[in-house]
Length: 248
Image 1 (cartoon, helix red, strand yellow):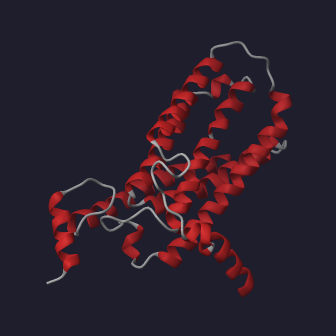
Image 2: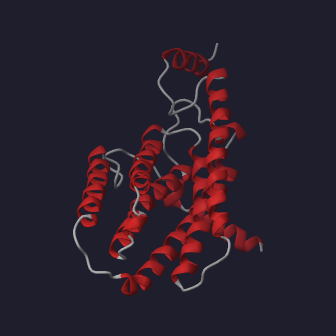
């Protein structure tokens, strides 16, 4: 059992590629504003175009692809959630850093590695929209669906670009809900209709409410302390922080 835990810890936290990860704008794959803009615009353009041209109903032929897609995102979500939890346990020096990174926190290390994987996974989730269109289920393609997919990618980019405080909590809760959601979709794609669809919706609602509550905690740390990384640049906070770092 100990060996298994150590192995999981190594491959999800202490592997050199994870431990030494660094988000460098212009160097890390997908780290430029141009990449982000082009990706979002391509998604929106293709969604609009494909949803307004007649396409054959490929639903019956898409089942294996849909099942593979759901299985992939189920596994990725599970690994991301576990990796982020283990990274917090192993590499968070103070419990309040879970909610509030200190000013000038660099986007390096295991937590930011999993934020990067989460960012890339949101591009993979664009396939959700394509499968909806190709299966001729256009009634499921709502404005909220497209808006959510596009804006979440931008949000994840900002997590990395600004070393955004609170993202570990958001990542874990979102990935955990997606484990349940894509497992449900996987079973549906295999011809089974679980009776706990309502549970998926309830978990999404709980996630939303929980995200609001922990945001209050983060703002408390931000305003009573030296500030939280990724909120906004406040010169007074920076001056106090630098004086504290310099010592008496």
